Image 1 (tube, helix red, strand yellow):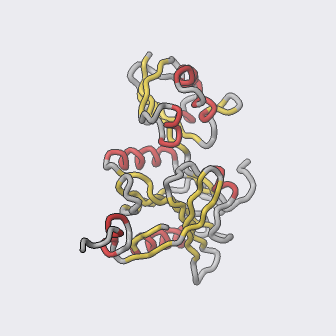
Image 2 (cartoon, chains in turn yellow, blue):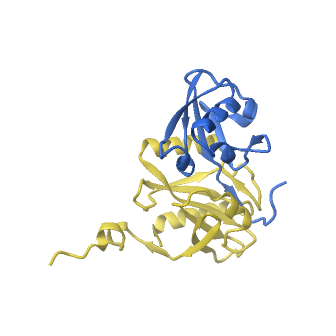
Image 3 (spheres, chains in turn purple, blue):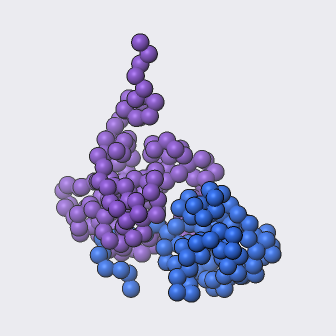
Length: 151
Length: 97
């Protein structure tokens, strides 16, 4: 399950709408091991294409180094599909190299409503997962909050 | 010529979990050959049909080797070689030409 703050969801959707009809892409970084997206990083689509995306290699190096320095990792990797549903394509699956990341897809094919879905992609297998949108992680049922209160 | 190679999570199964390893060579190709002698299987993840795999980005210091000769890119003593999986995809169902 992906638990994610509402403002991060809104930022991804706004980016996808802005770049439509080209595919938009980016990363949500979070503390290593936390599974908690915190920092929104919009990436350039080096392909500038309605059917492909690729992180600009130089920008990716800078962003990955900054994450390393801050003890962060890519918790969410997102991109948009502008003409098809929010389901990983064969190309998406062949490139997916981060088994710990949530792959978020946003479809902007309908101008009025968007679809946003999250997947794990592990060794070529696609696993759809629920998305819980929260106002704050403090009150969401994740991590240490799952530990029952002491009697 | 000793260089430092940063290894991404997905390839650390070949380096006993190490984030960075040492290697030697005058070109990226020689560095990868040297890595393969101690970290068996890593070459196959980086090189396909005699050139760098398109799923992989390799940088010497801050430079993307695609613009520096690919496998023939020169490396010098003390250089940092960084390997990152490319992040790419898209809605097209066919492979990019």
